[in-house]
Amino acid sequence: MLLDFDKLGLWKWILSAICALMALFLLLPILFIVALSFGNSRWLIFPPPGWTLKWYHDLFADPRWLSAAFTSAKIALVVMVLSVALGLLASLALTRGTFRGRAVLRAFFLTPMVLPVVIIAVALYAAFLRLGLNGTFVGFVIAHLIVALPFSVITISGALETFDPSIEDAAILCGASPWEARFRVTLPAISHGLFSAAIFSFLISWDEVVLAIFMASPTLQTLPVKVWTTLRQDLTPVIAAASTLLVGLTAILMIVAALIRKGKSR
Amino acid sequence: MSSPYLHINGIRKTFGDVVATDHVELEIAEGEFMTFLGPSGSGKSTTLYILAGFQDPTAGDIKLRGKSILQTPSHKRQIGMVFQRYTLFPHLSVGENVAFPLRVRRAPQAEIAAKVKRALSLVRLDGFEDRMPAKMSGGQQQRVALARALVYDPPVLLMDEPLSALDKKLREEIQHEIRRIHQETGVTILYVTHDQEEALRLSDRIAVFNKGKIEQVGTGPQLYASPATHFVADFIGDSAFLGGELAAVASGRASLRFADGTVLADVPMHGTGSAGGKASLMLRPERIELAAGPGAAGASLPVTIEDVTFLGNNSTVSARTGWGDVLSVRLNFGHPMMGQVQRGDALHVRWQPQDAHVFART
Ligand SMILES: Nc1ncnc2c1ncn2[C@@H]1O[C@H](COP(=O)(O)OP(=O)(O)OP(=O)(O)O)[C@@H](O)[C@H]1O
Ligand SMILES: [Mg+2]
Image 1: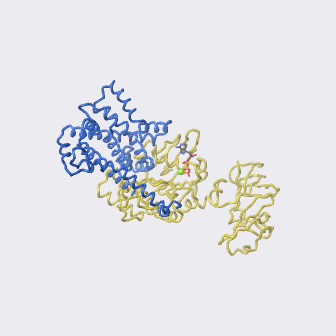
Image 2: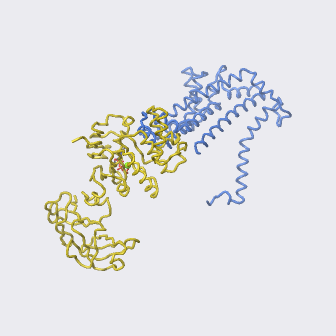
Image 3: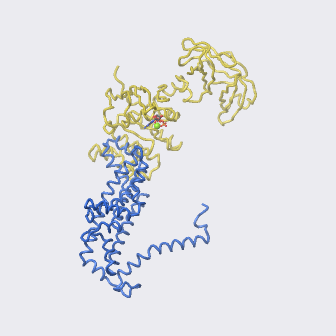
């Protein structure tokens, strides 16, 4: 190969350095917040003069933080299930259907990805005012479903496209009814796509803050919203502890997703 | 007369304006190996898909042991099929792939284990139960697919170009396996290919498809020795065609006049045509002899040698007729003429009267 990495000479080092700097740039804020969450300074001094678990104690002692985390998890789980189910149906139609306007429909399904989230948030807020959905669980789920669905559709239709429908035909000739073939063959064969879609849908909802701020009410708020509102009142290291937990769960799920992808390619 | 085992009865299938198959009529005996041979788009797969129930015919019927199967949905037809593409279930091991048809039939575990073992042994893959399909070669995957299609003893096994994705050597190896499996199991097989060598090697009988119709059905030697149409003569084996005009036709024999006025009389004629119509004379290259002059018996034409190509065990000689058509003649190694023939030589091509055929052209 002309651009073989080992033959790049000096460039090899420059590129490596750029990569390292980029990784550092992305990781530093996270490392910073993790360090602060264990630091004993009330004023978020960096580097921390000493170490403590006090902020985690405070976090778990405060029922408002716990209820926010619980709300976040509940919403994310429901969004995950709905997003995979609807994403699967939409992907089946997009990859197997022969109707006109399929390409247009696919592009349309992806618009929430490119539309500024604030615009979706404002639009939903206005619509939900009429429907009385602002500040409700259903409102949260719908809002997060809108931004999660495009990812589901992309990953699941990607998996379906690499699945040869002749395999389903083979299952049917083997004696499986069409539904049996779909459940026993097609779904397991695209399970890696379903899992990725589930994890990403969960994470999108779990981390989402803009829509959540619009949807939140004093009695119903998600963890990111709680971080945001607390931040505006008082700059306590408890926020760092909450953020660390948020990032921690995200990281674990990302690793699981990566493992699933690796398992698939093996 | 008892009804045939499998009767493809006047199947016609159209997709909009496209006629995929047009009144395909075929009777297949139990245990027979029948091959559909034909060029791309001639309707072979469509016929098979209708048998499998993936498509409904526009007209016609399919009868198995005298009973129509068209009303039976695909998954209840019990038919086995091996596809052109690899269709093993990617998430299941080889053993579970082969067990799948038995599992959906809710067979007892002991029976499943025994039948899977027997089926894998039939395709010479003993001990591969736990292998995942992705870790097998294309040839092995198709053999597993064959085991999966045979494990429930289907009355008919359909195979749609199962070897076309494999290289030539592997293909020949698996062709032998398929022949052996056919002999061991006695299963009735409908096999699709566009490779005439494969068709000749495997089949009891071959149905030659062209443009949605069956041109001729017969054993390999029958098709080769007495092709019914120009298309079959051209498709099976090498053949040389000389175009001309019918001078006279009478009781299955014709006289053919070529462009320079040469007339060949009394050649066996296939198809219908009348004096004045266009026709071609067909000769097999290995049945044509090259000689210095016309022989005492048989037919002959004067030719000029255009080109000689040495191909190892034989040489191919291109010979131009008086009116400009080119015939190719094969000289086997050791033939007295080999090495003697040169460009520009004026010689004669000769053949025995029964080796020439005239096909009317429409
Ligand atoms: N689903 C379909 N829609 C429209 N036309 C079709 C469809 N399936 C087949 N055809 C047409 O019917 C004709 C016969 O196709 P078929 O697949 O049976 O050919 P084949 O003999 O199997 O060819 P090949 O050797 O390329 O597989 C072709 O002209 C094809 O374009
Ligand atoms: Mg085909």
